[in-house]
Length: 138
Image (cartoon, rainbow, N blue to C red; front, side, top):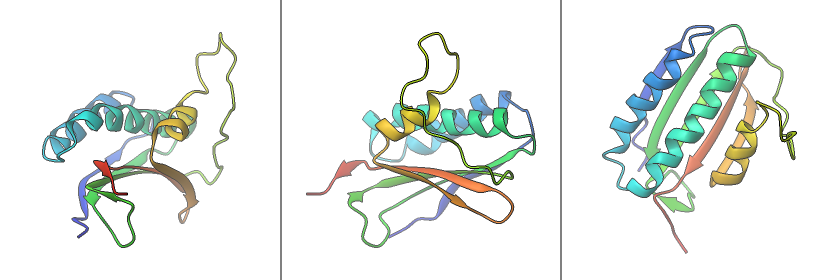
């Protein structure tokens, strides 16, 4: 059963301090998730998507996190985090950022560590999302 959004926050343009606030709010939600070993990963991936939205766009963002299984889900206790921004340009997944580069690793982390992830158009803008499961169901 899908429990719907458990965290929804609108973030002001350029408000990088919001990244820490979102992490703290998500951490509180995840105390009840039943997957303590994956909570840190969820925080990391959320931080990456929120930071990308605030650094690479100038219109703010909206973060939504929800818990549930959903129809056809391959995992139980699934966490889904969506970060919506208001710029239609889709991000580019880089295979290997330069070693001395200070950026370009966020989407690579999401791609590598999330159980599922993607990007979709949404009105004026896009939504980047990822999912993590508390446990994989065989």
